[in-house]
Length: 208
Image (cartoon, rainbow, N blue to C red; front, side, top):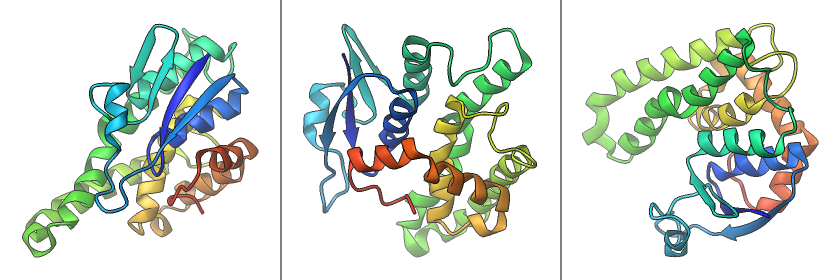
């Protein structure tokens, strides 16, 4: 059976949500961040050398990286759900969102998080970071115009990947300027599978 090594307040919440949406069988092993440093516990290094979460173990396969995990779970356990048919334009858009979420969109948001900790020393970097955040969130806002989901007419793995982008934008107080993204995040939070994932995964400070 697939095991999800789940860290509180982390990207592994999206994997837990995905598994709940699919109704796939899984075992959950929970880890807690250090209350002072907010770092993952050293036990995660016994699962994967990076010591990060999410990590899944499925038989002799161990995978880190959210995008790779989402893709694997949907192919292995989705039975055709949560992804468009291959060879369609929607499938290519789906693939783009899977990679965009961590490959481009999260970078300025994470820079904002870390540079913010520098206080005055980081001030010269904020105009460029703010500009990049606005660039990406405007792109996402436009993509959701008139749409309930990122691809097609139903939830896909693209939505599970993009939720962390929206969560971080909310943390930084950016969502009021992007009503489409704000509404999308509220819809995702309201899904029964997302609510179950919170119940099973424990404290998740990003959720409403």
